[in-house]
Length: 172
Length: 172
DNA sequence: GCAATATAGTTTTGTCTCAAACTATCTTCG
DNA sequence: CGAAGATAGTTTGAGACAAAACTATATTGC
Image (cartoon, rainbow over all chains, first blue to last red; front, side, top):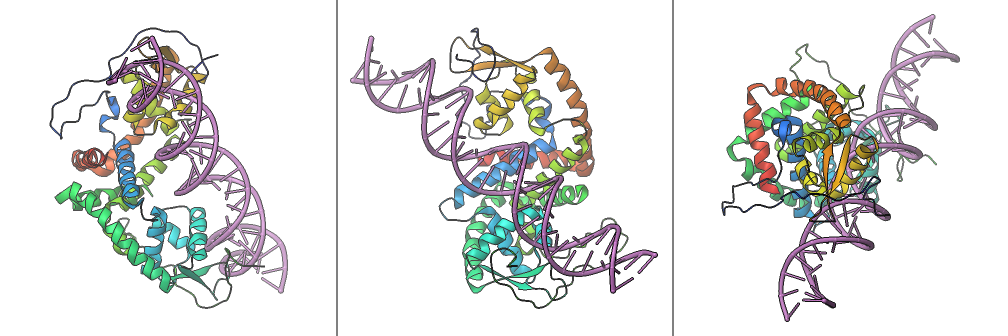
């Protein structure tokens, strides 16, 4: 049986797939139509975030810069004594997502926990000296990547950030 | 043993956590600092996309509108005969991600495949009548959700889309 | 003070995604 | 024509994430 996915088979007609193209690098010849998706904010947000993430990984693929690590490390640095829950809100991820990241960072002795006398359920986080050094390294890579995005958006950066913050705060 | 994550235990000092707040709805009292993350495009893209996605789910949580389904259904509608590979590019996801979505849609008889005579490795996709009906339903919900985002960004929408498209096309 | 409830963190489960490996077909070129 | 490489789709494996269930500690109300 040769069914592709889990359905019927037969054979029929073909669709054209490739067209010639000008040498213009700005020209974006698509072989499909986006239809109503064409001007949807959510759709484009996803695509843009995805593109940004992919570029990030490509740039840092050589180094061992995990995207999660950097934000957490950076946030702990700027908020010494921060708790996991606050950290999760700051980084925009669920608290359960933070646990394995912290475990990783602890295992590598980049952060340390200090108990809270006032609340034994929680604890305070801070960078070790090793963590500070690591953050410094990572920051260079991250800045380099950010430069790419900054160049792409150019002068529109403040406007872009303004709108994104608007979306972020309006929906929460 | 009572170690929190996989490390040492002790007990020490506390951090303040909650502050009073004005009644101003626009006021955004954060109990942490974003540090250098404050003006990073990638970081804000992720947060915004996440917020948008969450709002989407909340709005459509009652209906069974999976975010993946809608884009694929919509794209097939606007590109009858589209192949899975082109579909994956159009929806901005990896081709391997499309397979299970199509399997789902096929199982529910919302789409159908027609073989390509010119290339037996591939096949053409189109909506069934049921698929067209389902798409129509979903479109209403999706439009409603999009209205929310549209309201939030207001007049800045064209500018936002312009920048997002710029990022998308520049990074690919 | 103590039961009822709320909260911080962790664990578990399920979903979504990409990337790499794999199969089948197609194309190229000797 | 036939081997070598490219391409379409699927499968498998791993990582990131959220949500719900769970544990331990705090807080609240009687």
